[in-house]
Length: 308
Image (tube, rainbow, N blue to C red; front, side, top):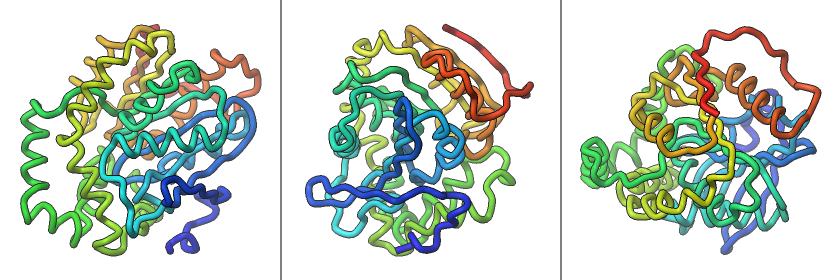
């Protein structure tokens, strides 16, 4: 277990666990106030949101679960192979904590995971923040078809399970400024996956990029249920994986939205933590009328496009 190797200054949170379907899921629950649920994608874990949790937990209750097979959640003998099952695990956490309402923050595969949960509990959702993500059919996208063919081949599976390709290659590709991926952060993303068995979750979630296409489309068809909800979109405009065409699709879909382009790649939380925290906090302050900000606001070099 790499838990003892986690840098407590970078990730100074109390570890909590709950059991769902005989599987152990790890989460953090820091601070008091209106609840915010943070949902990660691949190949990350709740560590991705450490800066946001440290800053926002001064005024909010910040909750972040490690998806099954990721971070400190159970890996050996895990049964979840679909994004839908990951979403159901998140629903179980909401029920476990007895949350009556919450703000939702999602990224990457955390988009369909978190939004799938939100569509089950629309009356509980106070706002949704989207980092680079999607919620529509993927099986007609030539790039996705190419990735799926690669993953299903023996070489792709070998790269994922033997060489830890998702972390050692794709994670780095997600940064437009590689210097923003510190040695310590890279180690924390690598540590959860030391063996072939522990990397199975990375491989399985990769297969769901194409394989869960019908489920994404079903969720997309239900999205109007959340039309009452204000959305904040924080988008890394140099993302190699989920590009500006996806952002435009969100703009065309969402009713109540505020959109900001940030000068970074896929992992906005790592490349632009301060800016994304400030924008998220400002958004939440307006919604919750909390008067004391936890970080100092200043002029930033981001492209600000308010679309409310």
